[in-house]
Image (spheres, one colour):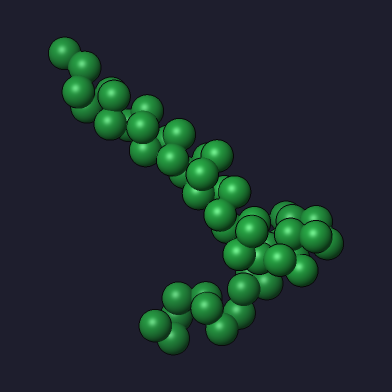
Length: 50
């Protein structure tokens, strides 16, 4: 837990704008919905393909 970054979110927001830094949960939510979820779905489809 100590190394998770929860105590230092700035290292995960280096390439974000002021709004994203001000509201990091919104930034993380958009990242999960738009980027990570698409990657997960593509990976799942790749494993399911014959």
